[in-house]
Each structure stands twice: as C-alpha cells, then as structure tokens.
Length: 287
Ligand SMILES: NC(=O)c1ccc[n+]([C@@H]2O[C@H](COP(=O)([O-])OP(=O)(O)OC[C@H]3O[C@@H](n4cnc5c(N)ncnc54)[C@H](O)[C@@H]3O)[C@@H](O)[C@H]2O)c1
Figure 1: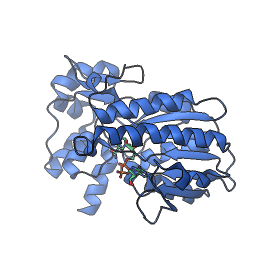
Figure 2: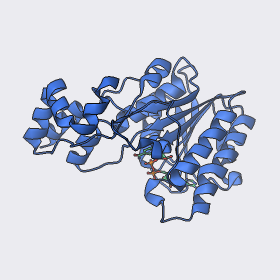
Figure 3: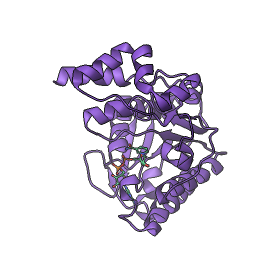
C-alpha cells in the first residue's frame, strides 16, 4: 500500500492498543478514523460495533481496517459469555462483511497469544510457542478470539487478512513487567510497529503471526528455562541478571513458555526492539 493519504479505520480506538496504533498510523501520514463505543481523543465515531448502522459509513473509502475492539481477558467472569460472543465474534463478522463490501484491501485483526490456552501448560520443558502449536482455548476470551480468527482467515480473498497474536502488553509493576519481558511480554511500541508493518508494509501478510519479544532464547534452552532459568539468564545475558539484581527484582524460578515471533520476522520484517534490556534502561532513567 502506498504511503500517500491512506484512510485507515481502527476499532477500539479508545483502548490501550487501539489508541497507540491510531496515533502511530497518524504519525506515519495516514488519515485514521477511530471507532469505539467510548469517546476519547482517538475516537472519531462513537458507536457500538454491534450496531453496524452506527459505524458502517466510517468504512467508506477506507483502504485498511485494524480491528482491536474486543472484550478482553479482564472481562472474563465479569461480563456474560453471550456478550463476548456478540462483540468478539458477531461484530467481527459484521465488520468483515462491511469491509469487504466497502472495498477495503487489508484487514488486520489484533488477536492474542492467549488463544493457545491449555497448550501453554508445560510438561517438563518450556513450551516453544510457534504458530504451529495447536490452540486449546481455556475460557470464553480464548474461545471467541479464536472464533474471530477463523472468520478473519476465511474472509481472505478480495482483501488480504492477517491475525496478529500479540503477547501481553498491559502496564504492570516494573518487576513483573521485566520478568514477563523475558518470555511472554511485549512492549506496546513493538505491538504498534507490527500493526504498522501489516497495514503499510510492502507485502500483504496473511495467516496468523505471533507478535512478542525480543527474547534471547534458543529452542534447545527449553529444559533449562523450565527448571533453572536464573542460571541460564546469568550465563546467556549477564547484564540482564545484573540489572535484575540492581533493581532488587527476583529472577524467575521457572519459565513455562516462550512466544516465538520468527514467522512475523520473516513475513512482516517484524524486529521488536523494546526487550528487557530496554525496559531496565527506562527504569534506570525514570528512577
Ligand atoms: N493489552 C494486552 O496485553 C493484550 C494482549 C493480547 C491481545 N490483546 C488484544 O488487543 C485488543 C485491544 O486490547 P486492549 O488492551 O487495548 O483493550 P482495551 O479494553 O483497552 O481496549 C478495547 C477497546 O474496545 C472497545 N470496545 C469493546 N467493545 C466494543 C463494542 N461493542 N463496540 C465498540 N467498541 C468496543 C472498548 O471500549 C475499548 O476502548 C483486544 O482485541 C485484545 O484481545 C491485548
């Protein structure tokens, strides 16, 4: 897609991920229409996605759609399962139909590494989570995100569609965030960069792609990651072990999975930059 005045619709524009993507796309020269049921500085159209009449005109002339709006892991057990199905699955179906009818060329769906579900539970070594690991949803969130992925993938044809399974990027206390940044977390800046590549990159990405990292591990590290990650971290990345010590953060005693973004690297040119080392440097500056 050319860099000139692209019109991109971002759903969930009032949320953590959607607002960051909307701002990044604007900074890249796109004309962004943010849709959300909540007003915010990045919401242009306040509408519930379950009501297509309220938002479908926003798609007129759009070249790409980034669909981040969803009920999310923190809503599990708080909001009825039926609402998860309506928003995460039903509204995604309506959005795909309307996007296809409006002549949208790229549809980027923000999915989650959570869809791997029970497959993330290790037996005797850390799970090496590539996209080839079969998903085994644990809850209504996983189930509906995976059902939406199926719809998105089935809609590929007239428009290109891709599902970005993003790792955890919630704001969390620095010690927790640092531990997560070793194997299951990702910085919001790397998440937005992946979406930018999917919308504007020269290649139309397809299928599902993990968006995580960067992590310093190799597949042969799985056993030690599970049983003695501190020794491995100290040997492989002594500056990281020293940084944890300086901050008074405990190193993990066991690592259960590692999200692998090699496919996104190959397909999108995804190069995450904000790993644990960057996080520690930021914490040092802030402190
Ligand atoms: N934050 C993370 O760590 C993380 C990790 C993996 C995947 N994700 C995925 O990223 C996406 C965004 O997550 P987030 O952290 O920004 O969540 P968020 O709750 O901050 O944002 C979601 C936005 O969607 C909007 N929304 C929900 N239902 C809607 C509806 N019916 N109509 C219109 N708008 C609606 C909400 O108002 C909210 O602004 C979600 O699809 C989530 O599954 C997030």
